[in-house]
Amino acid sequence: YVPTVGVVGRPNVGKSTLVNRIIGRREAVVQDIPGVTRDVVNYDGLWRGRRFTVVDSGGWEPDAQGLQKAVAAQAERAMSATDVVVLVVDASVGATSTDEAIARVLRRSKKPVILVANKVDDERAEADMAELWSLGLGEPIGVSALHGRGSGDLLDIVLDKL
Ligand code: GDP
Ligand code: MG
Image 1: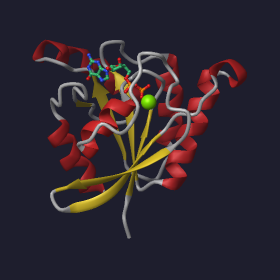
Image 2: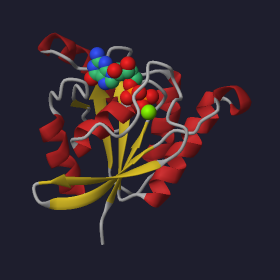
Image 3: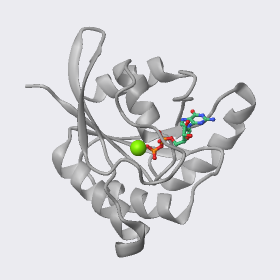
């Protein structure tokens, strides 16, 4: 049995960048334009000798359905289909109403949820993390998916919950 880690969050927070960081390869497509990951895509990960599957999610159509509703649906799917859910938020932006909508769905989950504060590119940016406690998902884990900052610690935490 290979456990799965679902990565969810609103567009442009850095989910695909984080997935690439986690798998150590640039396979997930990263874009400046929100909503570029059209479907749910699985990738094979390996950390400290343990295999797992990482699920990068997307597929929302903000215009057709409403962003909030679409990401909430994405979160529901992640909860039912994966062993651990990673919610990514953009620490440089802070908690948006969309982040709150996703967090509300995930708080009902019986599965472990890890809150990741992405785009904490340097020590100074760590101050941005404090307000993310308000999402009610515990301690935000600060990372920079782009530069790799904190990603090893995050993987240790994820594997611990698998
Ligand atoms: P997704 O839509 O959530 O999958 O987000 P992407 O991974 O496609 O990234 C969206 C944008 O955020 C891209 O321009 C990334 O280069 C940028 N980005 C991702 N992670 C970081 C980070 O840790 N720091 C900074 N500064 N930018 C990031
Ligand atoms: Mg993406």
